[in-house]
Length: 91
Image 1 (cartoon, helix red, strand yellow):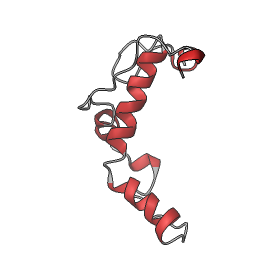
Image 2 (cartoon, one colour):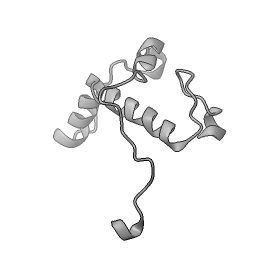
Image 3 (tube, one colour):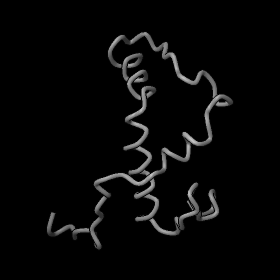
Image 4 (spheres, helix red, strand yellow):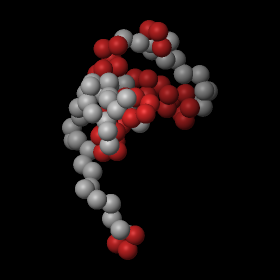
């Protein structure tokens, strides 16, 4: 991730380790799943199966940068990650 994004996120946070990257992914997934486009994608792909989503906005050029930043805002509850992974013996 660091090699692609220089180790910093959209909001300027340090994304130097996996925990920080997973926290950001959790924020994105949580916030984006609340947007109407998420439901439109589910409708077009899984419900109606027409594969013809009507996205709003209709193109990347129409996306409001403020909406992008809002997608990275903190969510509650915050993702709690274990300090260590369980050993194979304890699984």
